[in-house]
Length: 113
Image 1 (cartoon, rainbow, N blue to C red):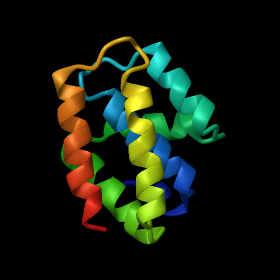
Image 2 (image 1 turned 90 degrees about the vertical axis):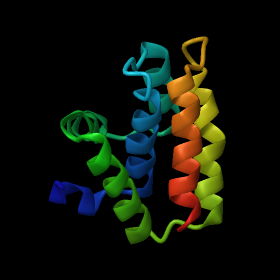
Image 3 (image 1 turned 120 degrees about the vertical axis):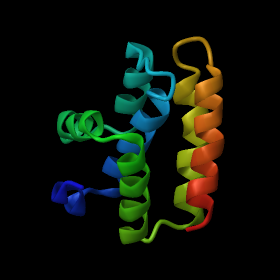
Image 4 (image 1 turned 180 degrees about the horizontal axis):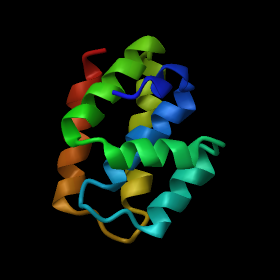
């Protein structure tokens, strides 16, 4: 894992996690990207996306958990993120089965925090 994530803000973590969801169907649309950038504007977006693109699914899940734990993500943080994910994955006009599975899997992954 890249040590640059040690300095991520909670918003950076949310951007990375939302990229994970938007790419579940291997097609991140410009509409999904626009929703992410509008909700969580960050100067680190390009860097976060580059790290995301280099990671595989296992590393992505580990990174999300690691940074969430480091930020002591609580129920309100979890609820904020989970509430916004449907907005992102519906932004391109449809929700794929892969995106639905990602939403469920992410809920399972983060609910244990």
